[in-house]
Length: 308
Ligand code: RIB
Image (cartoon, rainbow, N blue to C red; front, side):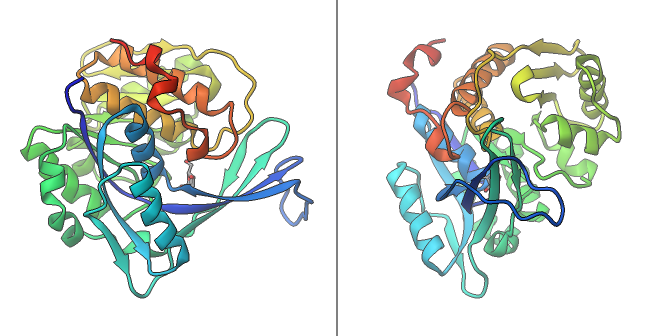
C-alpha cells in the first residue's frame, strides 16, 4: 500500500456517555444504566477511523490545559496520529460532549460544549501548513470556527489535496467554503437544515443532494443512517447505496466512521461509488459496538474491506 496522508483540521471532545432506557423528554429525570468517558469530537473520531485503517494522519486541534486535554494528547499518540499541531488554550477547558444513548434503539442525543475548540484559528492552521501541504485529503467539520476550516481548505486547494467537509453540527455556510469543498458530506438532518427542504424519503434526499451540489462542491454525499447514503457528482444522477441491516447497539460516531473511512478510500484513489459503499460498511460495523472511537475497527480486523 502506498502511503495515504490525511490531515484533519477540527474538533476534539471528551464524550461523557450515559446509557438510558429511552431519550429523556424536556423536564424529565431518567435513571441511566451505565456511564463511561470516551474520546470523541467529530473531527478526532474521523481522524482515528482513518488512522486505524492505515492512513498516516495529522490533526490540527485545540485542547484545554486540563486532565481531558492531557489524556486526549496521549490518545492521539496511542493511535499513531501525528501530534505536532495539537495546540493548547491556556484559558478554556477542553471540549466535552454529554451524550445519552437509548439502550433499546442505540440512537443518541448529543450536546457539545466546545471550550478550547472554539479558539482554533487561522493562525493555528498557518502554523500547521506543512501537514496540510503534504496531505492527500484534508477533512473539516463545524465544531470549530469556520475561519480555521476556510484557511485549511485554501491551503489544501493550492496543493491539490482533496477536501471533505462534514457540516456537523449544521449552521449557515458561506458559498466560499462550499466552493473550496470537493466532497460535502452532511447527514440527512444537516442536509435538510442546510437546504431548507425536508427529507422524508429517498427521492427527497436525491433532490436535496442536487440542490446542495449547486452551491459549489464537486460531490455531495448525504448519509441516511441505516438506510445507507445518497451521493451525486457534478453533472451526474444521484445514486443510492443501501446499508446492510444490523442490530444497532450505539449509533454515536457512526457518521464519523463513515467520513474517516471515506477519506481513507478516496486518499487511496478509489472511485466514489466504491468508497461510499465501503465507508457505509465500516459505519455499519461501528454501530454494533458501544462508544464512539471504541467502536471503530482496526485494519487487521477489516482487511477484506480494504481490498480494491
Ligand atoms: O459524532 C459523534 C461525536 O459528536 C461525539 O464523539 C461527540 O463528541 C460529538 O462531537
